[in-house]
Length: 393
Image 1 (cartoon, rainbow, N blue to C red):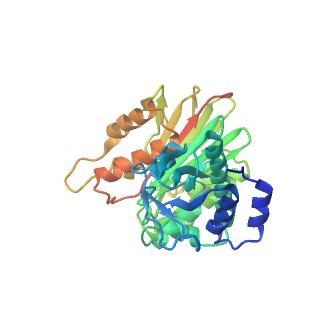
Image 2: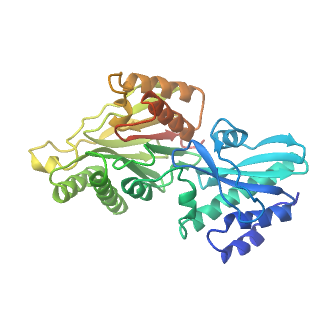
Image 3: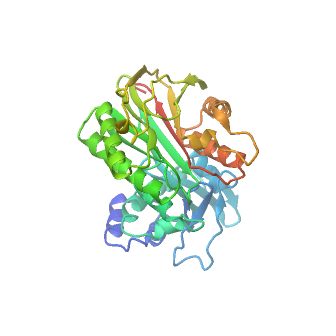
């Protein structure tokens, strides 16, 4: 199997139809000696891997693959190649990654399985991720391929607001997820790594639906504007409060704003009427992080509220901080017990002690919340996990 020629692959993709990624991958795979190529993208709920039609080699579209229950799903969860011997050769599954964000799985069949061949497949999987990251901006087809059912207008707006679900560097990682994926209309989060500082925020507007989605869009827009202007957290908070009060005088939003100095682990954050984040150290949740919450955005300017207080903490290498919205801990079936902070802390500790990657911790926590409520949430549930690996990992 020949290695990937990146230059030739880029030239092939440069003037191609944005929807032709499966065709491009098939052409490249043919030159590498691989056959029976399938590109799978994970759906918005991160429960199944949906195959892209390649318009060529497959007369029948392959079936979906369940995350964590199939070889393709294991490659997605573990983010390492998987292989199995078949009559026609070796079937290999490798992760597709957009930057840090795991996007799906590439499946190919090889005449023989060796570390060198599988390494070439991994390179092709990485290339597919970058293709999708660039081409998906010019077509809706990849977005539609990830939908297992119709998506509400509010949910569509929310997903378009979000940054990539995962950011990973040697020193810091961020992973977030929100549910219900196809109906969410309020909760959202944002982040940016600007040199030595990681910025992130969580927003939970009042209600559910279009109005909440519009408030969320305003919150994210105001936050990004002030973050890019290098305003301090208390000023970002004040501007958010004024913007929500002016544009939505009968509504409000809770949330948190946070910053981390990635060279030192110095963390600062501000809480606007939101559940306190949990600190995970040594594979265990050691408690909630202490802060002095202020009123939600949209209410502070209407009453004689005290000034916003910025909390501080000194993180240790390996520490993680879990942010979540009230829809996580308040989830319950009618007449049943709430999911609760104790259950959330226990599960977060369990997954952290298993040394799972942040994105997999978040995915499993969200699945647990959904299972607790029979897969039918009455409120949005959002989780954001930040992990600091230390100044020099």
